[in-house]
Image 1 (spheres, rainbow, N blue to C red):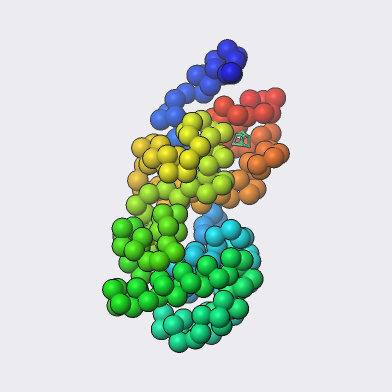
Image 2 (image 1 turned 180 degrees about the vertical axis):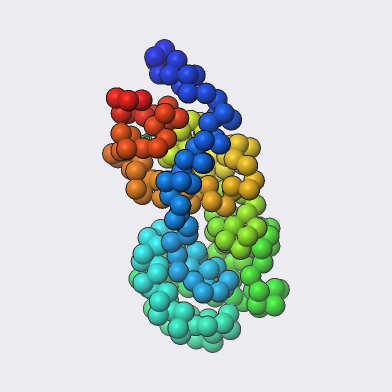
Length: 225
Ligand code: SF4
């Protein structure tokens, strides 16, 4: 149960709507370099990288795609090899059977229905096998057409700590965030939270005493808060 003290403190910080502007501004100054950590040189490579990033780190995906993108340059190339060969080539990202099957299916639909071009709208992206809401959101945003806010583990945790949502389910969290965050910031907002999560607001040991959001955060654990 929330105590009277923490409730009073939460009120004194201002409403979510009052705080969201300063939160984005301070994070943008603090993490001016925050951007997607996956390496890619084309829209198809972006799509493949994001698909491979499920359940693994971006560093691991980049290690695998460094070789993968030399061997497979066009969507047709992924269909020209036996599926077992593609499985071996993505093996180190984990869940390699499912990922190879998804890539194979996505490239097939990309060629058959989209002339080999990666679509920009989420309903179309969702027609690609193996592409779920989060992947579609990331790809659309990177292509300059953000239609939602990507919610990963960092975005979930920090949104909750900042009191921007009381939800736990990523879909419901996204619903809260899109009402709150200006549309112009939908692309950079998750990157800012992800980098803040990696550098400052750690899952187990948040460094509140060093945090630029300390005076805006109901979960601030530092004495100054
Ligand atoms: S004040 Fe602490 S809990 Fe709040 S965002 Fe900063 S590091 Fe995270």
